[in-house]
Length: 105
Image (cartoon, rainbow, N blue to C red; front, side):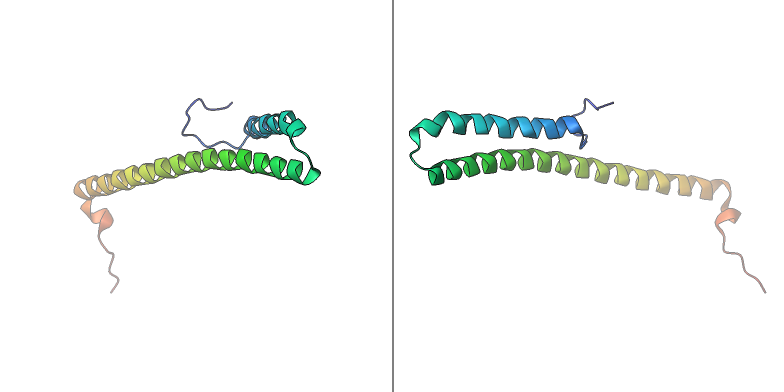
């Protein structure tokens, strides 16, 4: 089941289909402009520019989601560390002998 949270990073077929749709839309614009282009080199250049633009847009969106996921993971790790520190302190106050170093003579 896909998450509705925009900060959740998921690489799923629908995401790839979305990227394909972006590329297809740019391709359609290139095809509609093909009548004004005189040579195949111009058409190839326009197609390459369209694909590059679509891919750049997809990468930017992916980078944003990756950055959001990274930030969320860092925050979760920080909260977990704080919780562990609190738990360790509380356990130390309840059973200080449990944390004492055992010396063997």
